[in-house]
Length: 116
Image 1 (tube, rainbow, N blue to C red):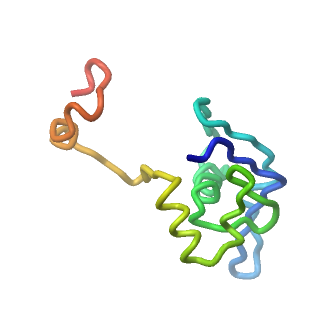
Image 2: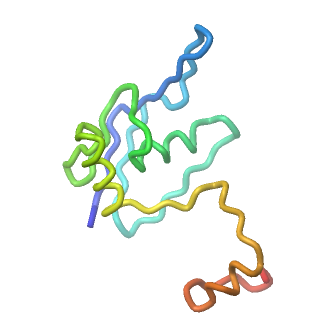
């Protein structure tokens, strides 16, 4: 299991219609298993892009992302997919559970008082 995720000078830009948009600029962060980390910012500030990069769903334009000294983004696509399957989990922001979803997984999660 991955203990540390390290971003060194990670940037991501997109080019469209001759315009370059910097989604993430020069991120330097170290995440350690067991710590709680929040990613906050205004709409369009690069939060989802950063999470996509950390989750190996996208590649940075520059910089490196290491997982316990491994650099899966330099691996073959199949090996990146295997790494993601074995080490990374996602809850996509488009996930919109309803009350029945929570009832079906009762015992798996604990809901704050007043949610249901």
